[in-house]
Image (cartoon, rainbow, N blue to C red; front, side, top):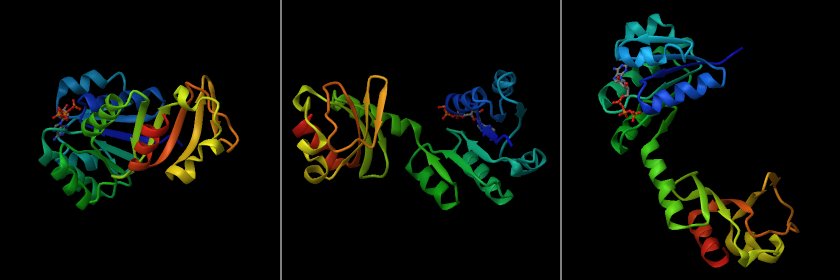
Length: 218
Ligand code: ATP
């Protein structure tokens, strides 16, 4: 059975989620208090409804409880975002993802039981900062405050070295989980695999260890 999603708040973030889910063939309910926004998504989403998500009876009548996943993408009105999350929790929605506007908002959302909290502006800012600091870092995914997965371009310094030669795990405590070489992807590379200049190394580990590896080796 197709999964059913509801997106509450059709700003740039919610709108983009709504579009992507619809493009991937998912059933999506687009919901916003603003009629213009709802009209904009009427031909994109499976259903589009105008309403105030802080009105419990509207959500109840929509059968929101039966949706597999609800995304709350209300930004500026933090009170409405919190109240909507509370109502959805009380109605028994299984999976709730909420966009947080700041750290206090995030704290409250986590206390009232939001399943996932996303902070797109902050996270994108961090990713871009990483890209700016190091020319070799292509992308970066924060796993925790101290651990990440990073895509690093191999420089000529390590061209022709195998993973054993570099002794990465012992020296740096990090793991290369995959190597992208052109169109080829080598998943869990063998220790004897030779690295070529321009390979993209997908590295997982503690931020301090990844930084050491970048500074000394790349
Ligand atoms: P963006 O994703 O564009 O950065 P934003 O963080 O600036 O958005 P807002 O524009 O404040 O967030 O809100 C996103 C959407 O949520 C808007 O389209 C707004 O109409 C809608 N919205 C706000 N409050 C409610 C509510 N109580 N019920 C339903 N929709 C709401």
